[in-house]
Image (cartoon, rainbow, N blue to C red; front, side, top):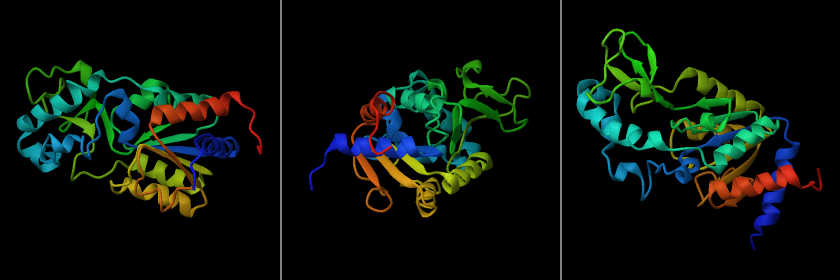
Length: 256
């Protein structure tokens, strides 16, 4: 069967136009075009760094060693990343009333920097540091990382990036928001998620079971593609969301 990209994007646009509640579910793939490599796969960070440095037990036992790796990955490099066209298109869809919630597995803050406001971060946010003693949260740019591990400016307690380490639970607020979205969305737009990471990967199948149409944008087939996806747009997130946006915002849609 031939794959007509224009036709498939048009079908996706019709679903989005007619949806009363749309959720975007985003993973590492949406940020690759911002220069942030994924954690898994051939080019993934776990092929370069040992993931044990992000285990909560290791962090608490050897915070200085853990922080050396954390600084390299998240603050020497990630901190310079900026939103790409996919992040910007989702923000525009929100402003135009076509997107109602973003559930993201990413910790890079790029959705917020692009202008999205209804963002629920399943794995937390690397742009803030939390004190493990007094629980004060500080923007990382306000904390010196010259001496590691960094200390709380209030109580000198150990600072930890405010994202979920291996061995830590998912924060309750985004978990509740994700389950809520899975229960009431007409369309679930998956972008850049392979469906490998639990428990986040359970959210799109829940939406499908509750009647949502699943639109997937990924460069390759994922764990979702042949199981729950209704429309698969194969390619880069930035290119395909831009194409989708062109149709959504500038072309009258037949079958509306």
